[in-house]
Image (cartoon, rainbow, N blue to C red; front, top):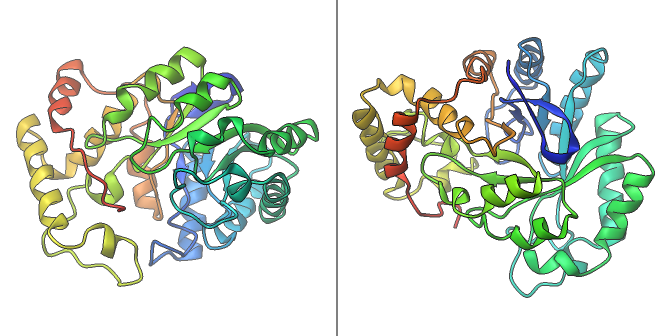
Length: 323
């Protein structure tokens, strides 16, 4: 496993991190706690040391599972990043809404305390706001909460999870110097972070956590026009209508363009992201030992050859399936 520095935090984190939404048993359907624990342990055994979760994943269930594994591996340095949900329950953050409505000081502190209890740890390595609006950079008392939590040793770093497909909606915050990390959707289809966000992060030494590296499955090559999902699974909406066919056809164009087999697509997609030096770590969801073994093997520091990166630039696809 190859490691990179998470911006100004100085944390040396594995290129391949663990995205823990899928093990919280909300949104993603089908997780099994025993298998999730085995997958987490296998990931750590293979050198993974960065796990991303959230208080909202199963109302703390994801955090509780992670806490079990972290405590079991107390002799190893494992970095855990979690997220505080907005108090007003708005996903994503809406323009014109005041910071006080989403992240008032008392709410931020309460969320941090709940996450600490769920994880069974004394400190959160990174506390992120689960949504963000750049209007909030100069509003409210959330900054006081972050400062207090840092001074008390309850958090080591502060970050934000940028709204889906709005990578420029954190540029002002980055300029203020108040943030240590940003989490953003970035993949072969969603290349817009390359335009402004990633250069800004490099300039200001901000850690970059990449979520949705495989487009919720769209870049695995396994989504076909005939794919079906549990009605309670968020992917039943994400891939509704003609979207399964659209994704299937786009994926086929990529494999044809680069002359690879369909089962090579996930590795190509992950290596594309890791070829960008601004990226600190990527957090694919890995609910099975098999997926852990396949994905962690890609964190070898090699990325992709320049000619393949160049070809993939032509497959940018501007859209928002969450809308």
